[in-house]
Length: 201
Image 1 (spheres, helix red, strand yellow):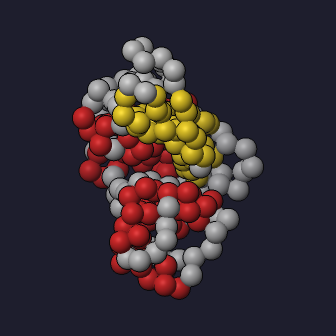
Image 2 (tube, rainbow, N blue to C red):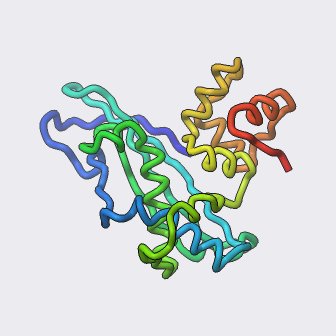
């Protein structure tokens, strides 16, 4: 994950960078679980891996806010080196939609994953029960990412929860753990188990 500080000189106009693009379809959120369920049914050995970039937008006339860009990489076989489909979505704390303002990273993750699966050619209609689909794991990847997404928690929220338990965690550290470049110690595993039901493998 990359964190960037971006200074925008224009005080009155809003550029495309700091206006989060809207969903292409109003059913993106309602069908995301259906598409994920259909993906796992068709490709049980596949993988869904989201990567997050955060930019802080700041200039003199506005309060700084964060914009999240999530890229979702879909593989039919998790052992494949190259993804079979990729999509991205950007959402920000300045969005017109109140729910998106409160949960910009989660909203961007949902949209990016749904679009990537759609780009793979999986289009699921309303006949698939959403309740059944939501029981399907959101991701096959690092166990921490699996547990975090199953708990519907963003990397930032998880870091804050770990800080509340006395650990010096940041969003970038969560990203490193999920990327496999930073191992967990015993105390961290215990805390994560309590917070999100984490199970190390």
